[in-house]
Image (cartoon, rainbow, N blue to C red; front, side, top):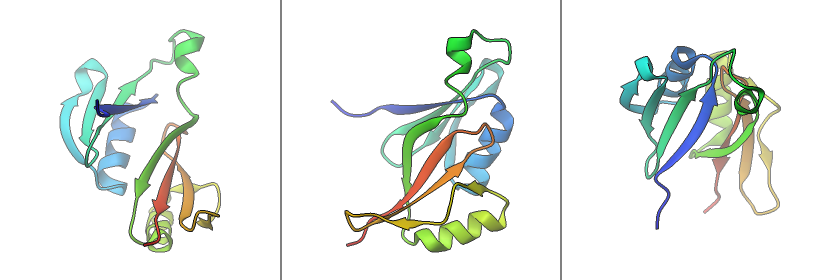
Length: 122
């Protein structure tokens, strides 16, 4: 068994697609925007963005704008933090060293979903 895809729910698919492709540099693999989704090559698993309509049921709306538990590995978290902040990306705070030796920085996508950059020390 392997992870096939990670799903992130968004309220503005075009803005999210531009963010994940432009700011984060992910490769767009499938653009199903007319159906409310798009798929990125996540470097081992696919990252699927799915649109949730403003008038969707409350249970569906609750999937947007939350901590989603997705981390993107980077070689230099401080440099990525500075680059993304320069592009106007919102972070909850600067990168922080972790007890396990690496560093994390939490940021918000255009729909308010919280994702993380992670740097693992060798």
